[in-house]
Structures are given as C-alpha cells and as structure tokens.
Amino acid sequence: MYPTSYFFQSDSKTPMLMLDSIGWESVKQPYAFNGLTRPDTNHVIFQYTLSGEGYIKIDGKIHTLSKETAFLVEIPGSHIYYYPEKNSDPWEFIWLNVRGPLATQIWRYTLQQDGSVIHIPHDSHPISLLWNLYRSIQEQENSQLEVNTQLFHWILVMERWLISPDKIPPGKNERLNNAINFMKERLATNLSLDEVAEYVGISKHHLCRTFVKHMNITPIEYVKRRRLERAALFLKTTDWPINRIALESGFNSASYFGKVFRFYFRVSPQVYRQQELKFPSKNLLFER
Image (cartoon, rainbow, N blue to C red; front, top):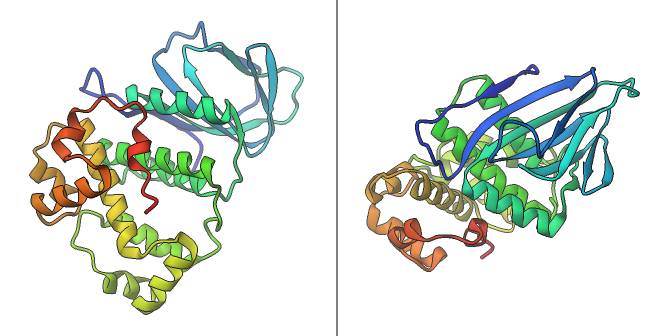
C-alpha cells in the first residue's frame, strides 16, 4: 500500500451512509482546518495518528494528537485541528469522511459517551479493519456498495470496541484471522463450516473451540451476525426487494431471512426498513 487519498461520488442525493473520502497522508507543512468555516459540510471525520503529532482545539481546550490517538468530529463543528510550524517531524495519519444521517447519529452518540479524542492501539480490531478498508479501495477490489458495507461493519466494530476493547489483538491468532477474513469474503455464498476449516488447515471442531475461546461465539453464529449486519445496511440504503436482500446477504430464502431477522431485531425486515432509528447500532448489538 502507499499513501494517497480517494473521493467518492453518489447518484443518491441523501444516502443514509456513504464513504465520502479516505486517505493516508504525511503532513510536513503547517495547515489548519476550522470546523466552522471549511467549505465542505454535512459529514463526519475520523482521523488516526500513525506517527508524529498534530493538535486539535475543541471548545477552547487543546489536545495533542500523538501516535495511536484518534479524533472524531462533525462538520460543521466547534473545533480546529492543525499542524503547527514549530513541529519538525511530519504528522502521519489515516482518515475518513462519512456522510449520511446514520453516520451523524452514530458520531454524536460516540462523542457523548467517549468524547472527541480517544486512544486506540495500532493492533486493535478497528484499526485493522480500517486498513483493510483502505487496501480494498486502493486495490479496487469492491464496488461502492461493498465499500459502504465494509464501512458500516467498521463503525459497528468501533462502537463495540469502545464499550469493550479487544481481548485478542489482530495478528495474535493467525488462523482465527484467516478464518474471519475467509468468511467475510463469502457471506453471500452457501458457506459451510467444513470449507472454513479446510481453508485454515484445522478441524472444524478445533475451529469452533478457537472461535468460542477468543470471540465468545461459534463460527456459525459469527457468520449469521455479519449477514444480518449486511442485510440491515441493504434495508436502509437500497430499494431492493426483501428476497434479493436475503440472497445478497447469504440467506437461502426470504422466509428464513425474515425468521432470523425478527428473532434478533424483534421486528420484520419491512418494519425495520421504515423505522426512524434513534441510534442504529443498538439494534445491531449481537451479544447473545
């Protein structure tokens, strides 16, 4: 991978959730962004420091943005983030801008609970997924819809991580990570436990034990939850019929999808699509 930035356009005038831009940069010259005066508005920002340091001033208080520190802000908003002339080392960071009412609601909830500036280890699950998102865009692996699905998953993981940080950082169990990536890439297929076990080179019983030990759920339950997250995004961001959403999300029939969806969400897919959610991830917290 290499540092650059990407910007996206959408035919939809009011997307519920959309990645507006993402980038990996190293800043050497002084610069500043004022959240109240910058021309691009109606989006939210996540920015994570990789090396060096910058600063953000929020409501009169200055925070240092050193390595493994992130900030979350809404545009427009009362803040200024900047790299001063006095700094000698470059400020390197990865960032993303997100548009849509779902993003705004989630950012506001997170700001209320955790504040604008948070520390996130570089080997945490959210940062690993953020790099995966950047890589998939750079290598042009996915469509815009698939990118937004990845984005939605990242937001949910971030929200969950803030509540309960990772017990096992990515990279500490290579087979588990390989199994997870294999399953996420094949959510829309008729995936079997035998296929996953064969891919990572262990028995399906060993795979189940590893999942339960580190994830507190079985592989089958993990896949089911990821499929439901995918379906929930499709319900909110497309006008596809329920049958297509079921198939695109990995369920073999609309009737089975509806049964599973109602069990987790307490409403039918049709009702969920029409709901005005106060905070979407509350309905996607699969901690059963």
